[in-house]
Amino acid sequence: MNIKKLLYLAIGAVVIYGAYIAVSLMFLPSVEELKNRRMNMTIQVRDWHGEYHPLTVGPKNRYWTPSGSIPAEMKWAVILAEDANFYKHEGIDVKAIKNAIKYDLEKKSFARGASTITQQVAKNLFLSREKTITRKVKEIVLAKRMEEELTKGRIIELYLNVVELGPMVYGIGHGARYYFGKPASALTPRECAFLASMLPGPRVAYNPYKNLDKVLKRSNMILRLLRNKGVLSAGEYQQAMGQEPNIAGLQRKVDVSIERVEAVFANVTGVTGPQEPVPAPAPEGESPIQEAPEAAPPSEPAGAAPEGEGGAAVPPVQEEQK
Image (cartoon, rainbow, N blue to C red; front, side, top):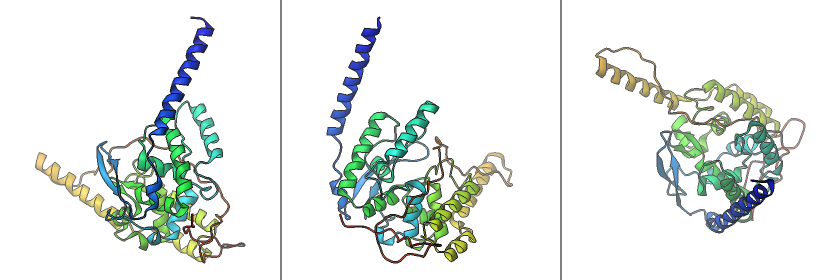
């Protein structure tokens, strides 16, 4: 087969694939209904054994936390750590995508996705988690539509209510109860940073059952970001850094897992005694994680904020009118 034929075949394949993507985009769901804060929808989420389960997104979910009940420190923690340009982009971060493409080409894999918070909402609500070009294109289109239809505050609200934080633990309302035994509205800055630190990889890399020190180290980094941007005052930062997150709920779950292992061992062997627990669920692929870049404070005014060192205060996240 000569080079000319190969060239024609390649061009034909590209045209066919482009047509396939175009048709796929025609059948994307509408995002307009997401503007309705009383809206409820059901999505499928996967547990740590690979099984899928329905999850209600909206006020009918008992752990649903409306935007007004989410601490400003929680919102800023995920913005500064996960998507520092959230208030600057319109759904996609072109610079981050270029860097991700360069990295993936060097590694010959889809290791880095450079997804914005808006893209993650689109993926979590409407798409699968497969790493393909087609899904990425759909994700970008949906993210652009969301930015046109929804406020930034609504996007953050949706994001924080569907993020994965543990074994079948979705959303900060459930995460706050699961780890700290309190509602999300009562989270301290340290606890907010703790939950935000888990987001890049709650199943493996930042699973507190297995890598608690790593989670705490990343949460310290997030607290520094909050201080640098003026979200926390100097006193609040020092207080948060001096605190150990009260993870009594987590420890109780570890203790229960130990008791279960001991009970099973006793039933099988007739011997009792301390056994090594295996509390962590089956691991899944670990996402590459980088420390978030420094970013200028977002411009949306929203009331009083702690004074930062040597500069203007950064206001808490609040919703703007669309």
